[in-house]
Length: 135
Image 1 (tube, rainbow, N blue to C red):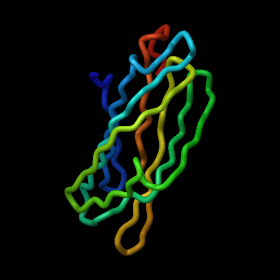
Image 2: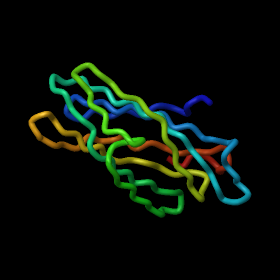
Image 3: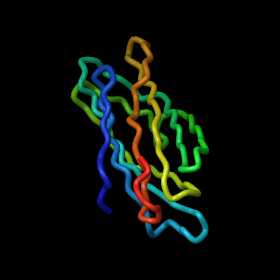
Image 4: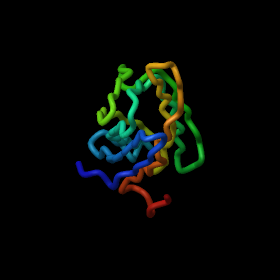
């Protein structure tokens, strides 16, 4: 699988890089079932250690239907990122339309208890089963 492209956003010295992948082998277009994976890299380019506490995703399909996902950490972890450190993971999402868009935030916490939101860049979920790129 080759990512269609990567998307990046930096908030308070934390850079989020996302690469979405369409999963043809898990999708069933005849049944309106389209599946994507996305690889996320979180880089701490700041001077302070941070811990990823929560996530909030907004997943919008090509009909404008929005699904919100909130939870603790990512893939069952609440990773700690030291200055210069990074954390990577891969997850996925299904849609009932051949394209969509995802965006969101991670809430980080410093050892002193300060919490702040880091923007996850909006990224397109585009499959080969659409009439053209919508985003």
